[in-house]
Length: 191
Image 1 (cartoon, rainbow, N blue to C red):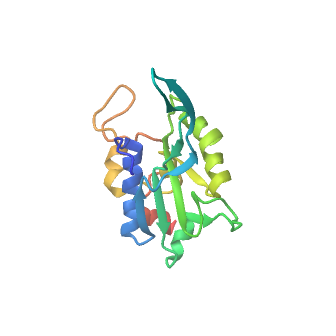
Image 2: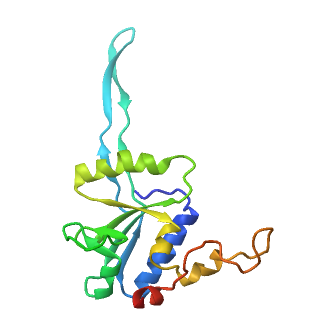
């Protein structure tokens, strides 16, 4: 059963990012909130409830089950050589670390904002990420928005969001919101 929570702005940006890679043929499939990982099963305890004439046993939950669902699962197109600019298999030894690590051309991705006011990144990297890897042998990539855009490219559909629409005290209308080089997918692939 898929999680029905509302999609965050960062997840929406990553969805558009992956859709642009899909249109370019670099990835072959995007799955939003793929099949969850069951990290821990529920623990229950049987209690005896005594009635006037008989006893009933009821089940009391001591510890709830723990299920984790990544934000995305992406399947890279292994027929396209430029996909290696984006991912490498966990077993390959690359010269430099790519933006995504995969398992047989499949990546699981957790999307976070660069601003983490609830400390959810620490919770993910110290608990969930190692737990999934230890139990399933799957590395879930932590991707921060807009850091991934700085490292690779900004999707064309959201490029306007990275410029100020109105002026302010420290910036003018049309100024860049971030101080890194803005690149399109083609500029990144040809750079």
